[in-house]
Image 1 (spheres, rainbow, N blue to C red):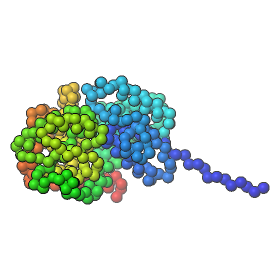
Image 2 (cartoon, one colour):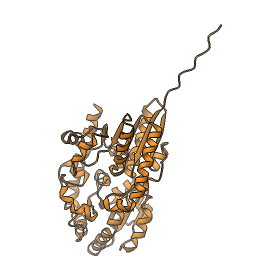
Image 3 (cartoon, rainbow, N blue to C red):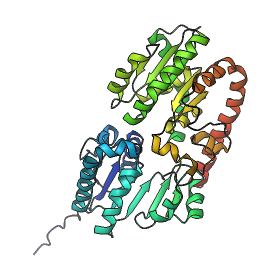
Image 4 (tube, helix red, strand yellow):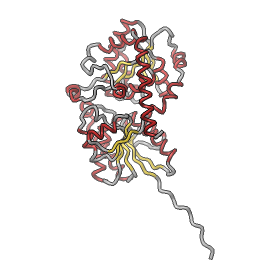
Length: 385
């Protein structure tokens, strides 16, 4: 009797559950999925919490992740019942999927609460934290506590593996910063095309204003940024202001623009944002990843961060010399944290940036090249090149 043909064994998919709590995590998650799909021979089975970029890569969100975009205790308290409900929902979804790994992306206020509960209920599920919390800046004791529920950290800043080793944190590997992969693209963008589209006169200074991607940031920074622009315009003359905004906070930004002395050009999309950086003479920005983006684009900046009253009282707990990523990487800074935000210092510093641009550009170009070199060198070491 002839033998029956045997069918090829069905390959088991790689099951992943990814959780991002804000836009930066969504961007990382989208790129991670894209890279895994390109490099893995297995089919991906994805579940998770994220935004548009993760959804485009085949990972739809359990619920709108904009609900999680809170920064501090004051922001969290009114929304605590809903946040706890989302934590429980996320944990149940992870347990139901039984993934090969749970990957949490930034936003430790939410993702770590999920990870702790998954570890208690399903200790065999590996948990990977993509982006280290800022344990090197404040509350360093978090590093050691993370060992209970995090198996490995994928770090995007070159000094973080040594920081976790020193602080007794989980195993940590530097995997490179995603901005390094985009340097050539950023530098190829045509800023003059943006100028022509907006009708911006060539003889008028362009200022980029970035009040944040979270509602809590926007609420705290729009008013002082407007005051800074009012003072700056009185001293330096008419300005062209460009305001890149993510969709989730654009309505809030438009509402709070009513008190500003200038009407900015609101732009959306990554290409327009980076082209605007290249076009701008200076930037006023919320502290965060955008400061590294501005530095790599070569844009002089004044960085602002206004914490809630409780966090402000605890600023003495900061152990890092800076709250600005380029300064942390370069190891040098001039900053006045929190105290000067309410007294018009931002306007004066912006005016200084505009008046002293020729000197500042020489300093900036040197630091920019050093920043690029350090990030690229770390990237090459990581890849073994």
